Image (cartoon, rainbow over all chains, first blue to last red; front, top):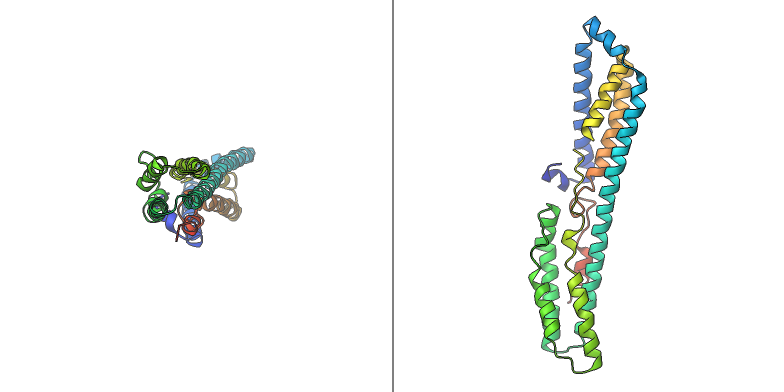
Length: 185
Length: 65
């Protein structure tokens, strides 16, 4: 499907697809009807066995089933990736409170910056399927460096530092999810 | 998928070529089913785009204030 069709509301997408399908159907009907004017051809058409319709319908149904399973699986994985990222960022946000002062403020600023970038830059790119995993989001990279450079002064901070690293590593997996397009057309 | 649908439509119109009304009805019903299947898949083809796509609302909710 072309890029702009993915931005349409479902109702307009349905109108577009139904119109296109009707056009193709009418074209096939008109072509066969025009060809059937000749008696020889009409006789040949009539001799096509109705028994070929069920296998064709079955194969079509299988293709639809496989495509739908792929598409829904992608959507599900994308939803899970966003949940996981939100959960990771919330964990980092809460754990950063264990390092009051400048580290806490800097970590909050980096998380905020990462979310702003995700919403305004990464999301439109993912919608067009142009996002890649080759570049680590800069705020996340800086957050990871900051977490590793912290100097814990008690057991609580040591634990918080350790627990902050894993969520920051996991937070950047969203762009890779849901990247296989079924493109039925 | 579209090619297979077109082939099936062709087969339907061949099989029912003796009666134009029947052919039109059968093709219409099958074409409607095809359109529903295409809409169903196309609406969620890109997980982060479109009306049914995943939105960044959850991330915005966890942004530090």
